[in-house]
Image (cartoon, rainbow, N blue to C red; front, side, top):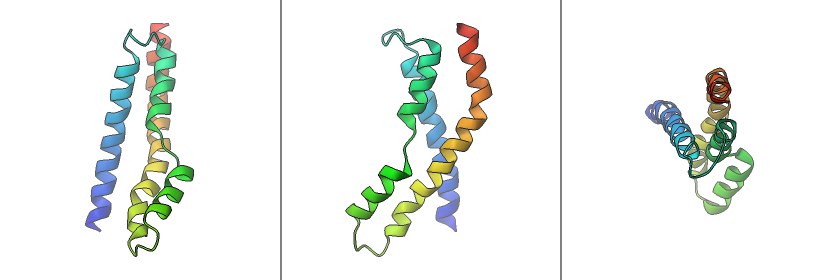
Length: 100
């Protein structure tokens, strides 16, 4: 139970920090991205898929009795990415339309 609480606290925090870091990075003039492109790049850089992660974990930890525990963070992060992204869409839409 404790591990689940830690995962449900730590994963959203880390995901939001990575979104903010990537948006800040891609908004730099060095890359030459427009604001809309920086928002799109932020989502592309921070999101990971179950289709890649689960087979990789199962291959690396094949035969390990704790493989389900290793898959838990990935199983939590996938829907979390979609939920947080959906919540952020109105603010990011205003951000990108304001500067263009």
